[in-house]
Length: 83
Image (cartoon, rainbow, N blue to C red; front, side, top):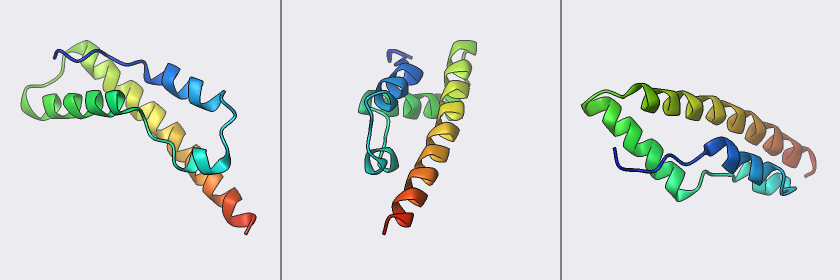
């Protein structure tokens, strides 16, 4: 795979330390480069299997995705309480 592995942990750390609003947290998405990389990994997993490095990258993404979902759920709940 030719794609450069974006550091999704650094990307999220940069976002979360930028003092985002609850709305920004609720709407957070990975960068297009990161989303493209993850899509390529998922396609590679379906078609040819993954290298150990690619497997680790998918595992990293899954862990971060869980954390992001938890943050989004909490942000949305707080926004709902403010209405």
